[in-house]
Length: 561
Image (cartoon, rainbow, N blue to C red; front, side, top):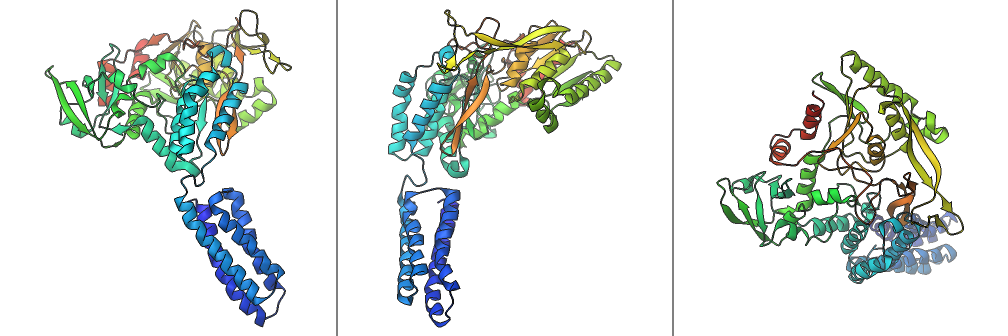
C-alpha cells in the first residue's frame, strides 16, 4: 500500500479512539476548544490527500474523516461517540478494499495512452520525416494497453509503452516512470522485457558470429567463457531468439525507457536480448575450445537486466574522470572527458542572458590546458564523449569553435513555423523551409593539431551535435565501435499523469532543408563515423577479460601516441 494511505489510516484510527474518549471528557470539562478536535481528521485527510491524490479504495477513510465534522457541530456525547465509531469502521473497511483492489493506486491506463498518442501526433516534430503512422500504432499497441487496463497490470502498461516509443527510433523519445509510486511494476516490466539471467550476455562479433560475454563462473565450468561462440539458443540462432523479446530497447539504469535511433546502433546490439529468452532452463549449443559443438542445459539465475547492464557498461564506459576533466595518459596525450554538455551553473545562467558569451570561462579553461600540453610538444587531443547524455547547444558551439580550423561554419538552420497551420512550413519537394542561420567561428587552438572524438550509441543529443559540427573538419576524426546515437532535435516533454514523456519538439535543419542529424524512415542518421573499430576477438578480450579501454588504446595508436 501507499505510505501516505497507511499513515492516513493509522492516524484516522488513532483519532477515532481519541475523539471517542474526548466525547466523555468534554462533557465533564466544558471548553469550546474541544469542538476543534473533531475537525482534525478532516484536516489530516486533506493534507495527506494533497500528497497522495485520490484513490477510490480509500473512499471510506475520506467519508469517515468528513463525518467527524458532525462532532464539531453537535456537542452531545452520544452523537460524538457514534461519529467516532463510524469513522473507525469506515477506515477499517478501507483496508481490505485497498488490499483486494487490483487497480489500487493505478492510473487510468487508456486515458494515459490517449494522452501520449494525442500529444505525439500533434507535437512530435519528426512525424513526417520518419513517416509515423498513428493508425498503425493504435492498431498495434492499442490492444496491449487495453489488456493492461483490463487486468490492472501496470507492468504490462510499461512494456507496451516501451514498445510504442521504440517505433520512433529517436533517442529523444523516452518515457519516465514514476517509480516513487510504481517501482515494483517498473521493475517487473524490466524483467518481462529483458527476461531471465542464464549466466551470460550475447553479442555479435564483427564477422557476425554470436559470442558470450560477461559470463558467470558456473558457465565457465561448463566450457562457456568470454568469447565462446554460441551457435544455438533453444534450437534457434541467437539472432532469431532475440526477436522474441517483447521490446528491443537500449539497456539503461535510469527509470526511463529509451530506444535506438540510428540503425547502426541497433544492428550492433541485435543479439543482446537473446540470452534472456527462455523458461526455467534453456538448451544452449556452443563451440568448445577444441572446436567441437557442445550442448548444455542452463538454469535461470534471476533477472537478465543486471547482467546486461554490466556488459554494456564494460563496453561503453568512457575514461574515468569528472565532467570536463582532463586525464594525462602517461604524458603522451591529454584526454578531455565530457560526460554531459554542462559546465557550471554560472555558464548556464549566462547562456540565458547572452548566448555567445555564456561559456567564455569554459573556453579559457580548455585553452589553458591545451597550452600546457603544447608546451610539452603535444598538439593532439582526444575528446571522450562516450555515454554523453547531451545538454546545451551553445556549449557545443563553444567547444567546436575552440578546436575547428579557422573560419566561419554553419551550425544549423531553424525551421520556419507556420502559426496558422500549427506546423513547420514545407517546400514542394517535402523539405522544410529554413529561417534563422546559426553559425560558429573556428579558432584552431591546437594550431594544426588533431582532434579525435570517441563516441558510442549513448552519445546523444548535444553530443550528436558536436559530432555533426566537427566531423568532416580536416583536423577531426570520429572513432567508435558504432557511431553516435543520431538524435539531434530540440527536446520538450509533456505530463502523463504523474509521469512524463520526452520528445523532439523543435526542428533544426541542414542546408538542404532536411532535419538536422535525425534519421528518417530509412534509419540512417546524418551523423557518420570516420573509423569504425571492429568488435572482434581482440577487442572482446581487451574489454571483457582484461578490463582495458580498447577504444582509447586504438585512438592513441591512430594518433601515434
